[in-house]
Amino acid sequence: MDYEIIENYELKKHTTFKIGGCAKRAYIPQTIEAFVEILKNTQNPIILGACSNVLISSLGVDDDVILTTKLNKFSVEGNKIHAQCGVKVPMISREAEQKGLSGMEFMIGFPGSVGGAVYMNASAHSQSISDTFLSCHIFDNDKKEVIELNKDEMMFGYRSSIMQKKNYILLDAIFELRPETKENITAIMERNLEFRKGKQPNLAMPNAGSIFRNPPNDSAGRLLEKAGVKGLKYGGAQVWMGHANFIINEHNADSKDVSHLMNKMYNMVKDKYTIELVPEVKFIGKMSEEEVEIWNTMLKK
Picture 1 (cartoon, rainbow, N blue to C red):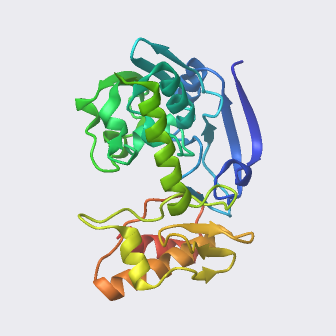
Picture 2 (picture 1 turned 60 degrees about the vertical axis):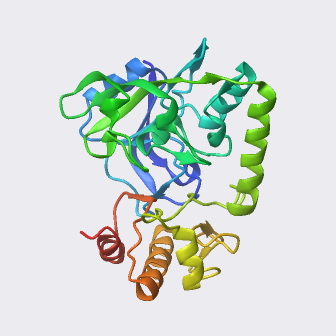
């Protein structure tokens, strides 16, 4: 059997936020074939990759959870990279650098995996996943079948793809890069890493990346800073002093702490600018009554 099944799997240790209760049942496939088999035999499971942009409920998760961490194989042929959904994106950034291939420099400091990067069309420093994306294999969870999609069919937009609109799960993807000198690629990557040092907390301070999406023609970080949210605390969660669009798990924060703090940030920007920020972090699992109210407000449900 090419997968493990673990009962009462603690998700906290699996997330970059270091927050989360237990999954009643977690599957860990080691091959794409095993992944597909599990998907065919479960009803709408929650797929977790590097868990870098999620807030897992401290009350836990009732649904089946599939962890893609073992689906971490990739290969390079010519100027194409073929990567499974669980590959950590800095790994393919480094491999592309070694092969003299440009297009993945922006992901060098990302804590995420290929699955999440494609799902949200990850972007930074004027580069995005959609720039190099060629094609992928997707599991259609409604029809319970594997399909292949090209770039046009993925309907990429800012922080969006067709995967957010349909019940699709990424299995693997192919990217087409362009040749460039290793020196130029390395220089870009070093510049990107240096930029991130000053603008984003490292994972020694548990966080989930950007909390809110940028509104059209503006910056969520700028709005939050002007609204005065830096340093705000709720329970064990705190808005990072280095950048107003990050929350750090300062001292054993739970999902309720983070939800309340997000709600404060959301309301302070709304009161000052009448702009309603949209969460970039996704909440997963059982919600307390307070969390239901907070997230329904922020997601306009």
